[in-house]
Length: 517
Image 1 (cartoon, rainbow, N blue to C red):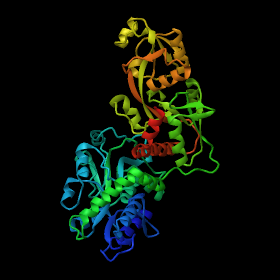
Image 2: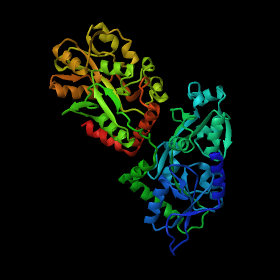
Image 3: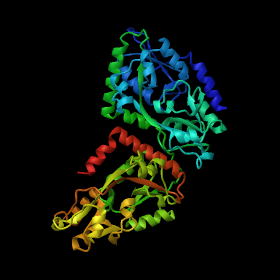
């Protein structure tokens, strides 16, 4: 019923406008059309609000341009743009066919070819397939060909541009006027999957109390930038110049972090429950990513986790143990999440993994929800550099070199399949000390972890590493299936989303650079 009421409201709103800035004598109000697209633009108490509304209002106030918003379904917005009856529209992406009636910057036009996000983009969308929770164990998304083969029925919104690959795929498509209609069709079983931006989808599920009925597949379909786009057929004075000035102000707001601050005001997070116990992360001592200094847990991951969990308003603790014990706690449900762990099929019964995380082993594509990327190398005593050579794993075996390994490490499939003359250790510290003592000849370890541990042990002058990279892989914050923490999967999704925002804003890069010095 609420979805139906919403659709009727939208139809009525096609004739209503809402003012956000006071009119001046220099020009009429600039009319901006918007779809119900929370949290970017929506009505609250009959007033326009949202991330993009707030950004637009600040910029237009600075430019001394009075504005009004009108809300209506996208098909009508498209018609109004084509007829020049509005001056601009929110959350519009570039499409070649739209160039006839809309202004686009060169960077916006080039995105489909280069994949480079234009600096003047207000926000970047990540589309996922939303599905009915009843089919979460059976529905999957490997490729569009797989979806065609499995005869999936796909809901789409009329006149949306999506992206070329999606539109060209010969999927069984059902067309709807807006997202609420498509979500209703999803709950009723009329369609199997519905592509929608992750943030907007989660917001709508919460708004319409559909969180228990609908979830999403974690593999992204595509990403694309959105902006306020101006209409060529408008009679508003100097509209192209306003567009250029507007885009420059967007760039400034990104550079200052103002847009990131506004975004975090609206993005939904996991609501804390009363008397919620701390969420327990476990890990081993792996400097510079997580380690103890002056009785405090520090490191890159520790700082990232602290920022995210505070934004989610969830209390937490990070506990550092030898790796075997940390892994045992995860297996028994005594921990809620594990830091700096990679994907391994045998770990599936213990940990939740996203589809992207699983696919790395086959595709080599780094998932969007990783903490950091590792490069493993062989560490070696400096006085053995002229004696011990590494040409291949086969050569290492034939030469009968002793290779150190850490207990319960996954390394990578190719490395694990080699029958090295091995000795096993409980920690990186133990492995490097064994190398220094001459108990082993080679010790494989992440380069940054190995170097940081050598500095801690005072062995940086006597041990180095060979330049050849053995393998590279992403490390994750993986959440534990056997944990009794409330709504842990939702916490996981919110955690990954915040991590994605940190990368997009450049915040993560600054933290990474600080800890890798």
